[in-house]
Length: 511
Ligand SMILES: Nc1ncnc2c1ncn2[C@@H]1O[C@H](COP(=O)(O)OP(=O)(O)O)[C@@H](O)[C@H]1O
Ligand SMILES: [Mg+2]
Image 1 (cartoon, protein in one colour):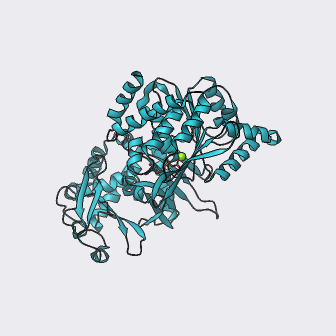
Image 2 (cartoon, rainbow, N blue to C red):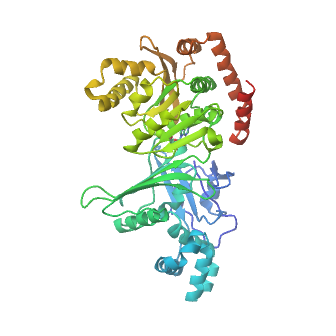
Image 3 (cartoon, rainbow, N blue to C red):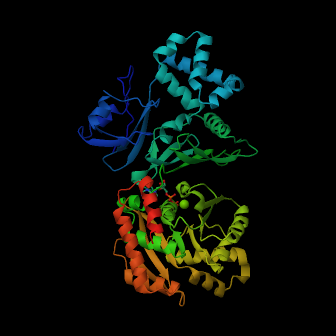
C-alpha cells in the first residue's frame, strides 16, 4: 500500500526516492490508493507511476511524498521523501529562516495572520535574492512554512491523514501508527539529527501554541486544531533529564470527522445489532463501561454512540484531553475538561447539574464509586483500561480502594458492580479494531452474561431480558425499540453526519 501526495504541475526538479532501485523489485503494476489531505479526494496510481517519478503532484504547498512500503517479509516501513534542495537553495532557505527568527517580533503580526508569503518577499527583497527565490518559490515556501508555522521534520507525517500516532524518541527514531495497520508501530526514515535540533523543534512548536518548555517545566502538551478544522491532534513533549530519559514527542491525531456507527460497521468493528443495543442502552440511561487496551477504539465507539443519544436530553462529558467530538449536538452537549485533582471536583459538580447522561472519558479513581453507586437516575458511560472481565473487576476494586480505603467493603464493590449494566470490551484483531465482547451484569446476582462474543451473533433474547429487568419494561416493547434502531442504522448506512444528524432529530421528534 502506498500513499503519495502528487504534484499537479510537472515539477522543475524532482527526486523520487533513493529507494528507487529497491522498489523495482516489487510488482510495478499494483494499484495504490491514497488520499489528498484537505480535499478528501482519492487518487489511484500504479506503483510504476510513483517510482517512475513522472508526475508527482504538488499539492497546496506540500512538497513531500509519503510512501508506506510492505516488504516481502511482511515488515512495514514508512518513507518520507521531501523535495531535494541543492546548496544554493539551502542557503536561500536558511537565510530566510534566520531572518524570520531574528526579526520575529517585527514580523510577528503578519506571521500569525498567515501572511508568511508577504514576509518572505520582504526578506528576499532586502537580500536582493529575488531571482533565486522566484525560480524555486514552491520549494522554498515549503521548507520555510515547514520550519516556521509547520511541524518541521515531522510535518509530512502530521499531514498524512492515514497516520494516527507519531512517536519521537530522541535521535533514535521517529515511528508512526497508520490507521490501516492498527496497533503496530512502523519505523520511518525520519530522524532528528541531534538532541539540540529536537529540543529547538519542541520549544518552537510549544511557543507557537502559547506554551513554554524548559528544564524547570520539562513537559508540555497541547491540542492543535488547524484553521480549516480538518486536522486536530494532541502533542505531548518532554525533555530528557540530565542523564536519564530521552527527549520525546508524542502526537495523537483525532479523526477529521468523528466516526459514526455506519463507519464503524463498515470497518467491521461491530454489527448493526451491537450498535443498536449500545444506542438503546444510552437512551435508557444505562451504566456502561467501555473497556480494553489503549488505542482499541473505546473513545471512538463511545463518541459514535453519543452521536445517537437523544438530542433533546442533556449530555455532560468530562475528559482530561479533548477527544470527544460532538459539536454538532449544539447546546445539548455540555463538555468539561479537567485533569488531575480537578477531575473529581468537576465530577461532583456535574452530578449536581442533573445530566441525563454523564460521560467520564477515562476513569481515574475515586469518582467511580460516586457515579456508579449514586442513585440520581442519570445514565453513565466511561472508558477504562482492562482487557478481560477479571481484570475489569480487579481494576474497579483497586480504584474503589484508592478512595474508600478499608471502607471499600466487599458490599460496596459488589454494589458498584451490580449497578453497572453493561461492559463492552474492545480489542484489535488482525489489524482491525473490533467490539470483542459484551456482557450484561445481572443486578441481583451480580453475574455476568456474555451476550456477544466476536464474531458470533448477538444474543438478543438475553440482552432484552436483562434490559427488561433493569427498566421494568416489557420485553416486546424493548424489542420494538431495538428493531427501530437497527432499522434506522441500516437506512442510514451511507449518510454523512450532515444528513444523518437531522434525520436523527426527526426520528426522535416523531416518536
Ligand atoms: N473502529 C475503528 N476502526 C479504525 N480505526 C479506529 C477505530 N476506532 C478508533 N480508531 C482510530 O484508532 C485510534 C485510537 O482510537 P481511540 O478511540 O482513541 O482508542 P482508545 O480510546 O481505546 O484509546 C484513533 O486514531 C481512532 O481514530
Ligand atoms: Mg480513549
